[in-house]
Image (tube, rainbow, N blue to C red; front, side, top):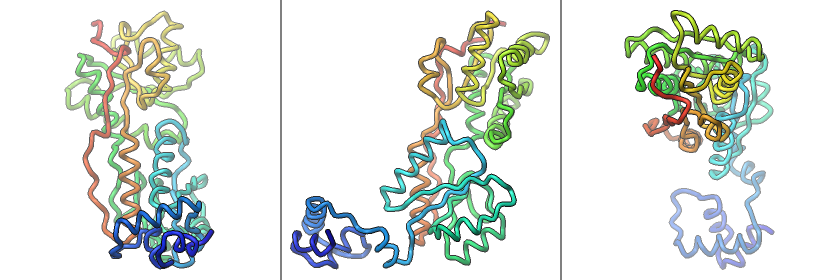
Length: 331
């Protein structure tokens, strides 16, 4: 099927079909005519060819996400899935490339893919920016560091840590710990969450959080957790890097004949289904991932159409969920 077939069934010109299906701006087309074109396209099973659109417009419709060697799973994996959906609904294709080597030649990546937009989830150097500008490629920054470009993120990892600490501090805890994975690829997120926990402790005039870098083998974890929970500086509340780490802590506590929140309160991040079903149900921090993906997709769309970035809207993007794994400290 071609656009000529759609035009014949709808009783309009091929130009009108093109305007409607490509959502061409500044064209006054009656709603009834638009409906007739969409109905004809649906009846015939016609969709515009992306190859033809790219040739006609000189643009690929590709958004290339450059990200560090982060684990793609959990909340971050869901964000990427939501962003893919949002961009697809706007006629754009989202591809990602993980930087495995700090000295990697990124120019060869975007040279092969010819993206319209690069979404910087990792850092871009000044030479990267110059090369992209020379190619006419737009740049949207999300989490990464790109000189001269504002961060489009609404969700702040620092505020995630602040929210975790606030759950415990509001319940009367004064001695907190932060437990994070040892793997370096978690560090970007973990450092910022820890800074948020530390900032909130400072604001509440309580000691800085003790930090435990997890070796999550059973024997090692038992020893490290016991060290946190005993002695003169024993903690009463733990902020875990995410729900997975928090559930490992709760499991280890059972082996030590300890229970949350009686012996120690535990807060995770991500609001996983497993955490909600756990016994005790896990207190956690949730992200509004759909809103974040929609906002980033809109920023990308604005840059692709030559418009300035919109303001990062303030929403309830970070939500504290208090369940049974936290409570008032015993002492």
